Length: 141
Figure 1 (cartoon, rainbow, N blue to C red):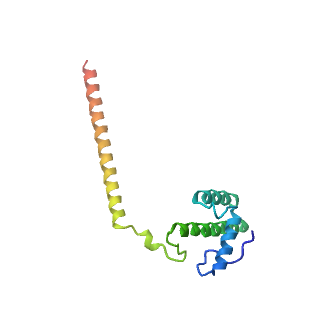
Figure 2: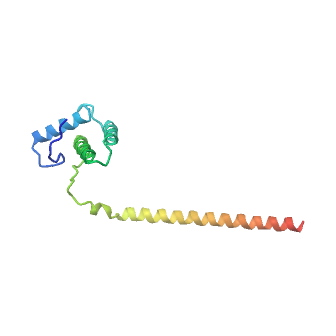
Figure 3: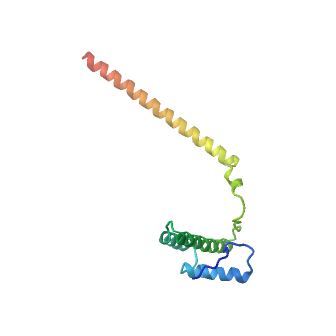
């Protein structure tokens, strides 16, 4: 399959261009549109990513092609499932900031971890005290 020098993730393509890109992606991954599912797409993506992994310019272009074709098929699956369409040009800085719920969950997790550490220290101290007492009684005998 020839990879044309245009962006397959371009959302301003005509329907004919989108169909051609979809067919090219299906052909590249050797998949059928009627049986396309996320699991088979992931397997093929991983396989082709490992095949074309490398540091040469050619391998970088192949990986870019694999990623573009994966994005096309992933978008097709999203559309079939009624999920919102990804916008690859948007800035992800907004999504990096945690929500209030995530902050609360993180604080609760940190509190639990602190309590767990305190319990471990107490047990260690209790064990040390018992060991010292046992040693003192043994020395007296």
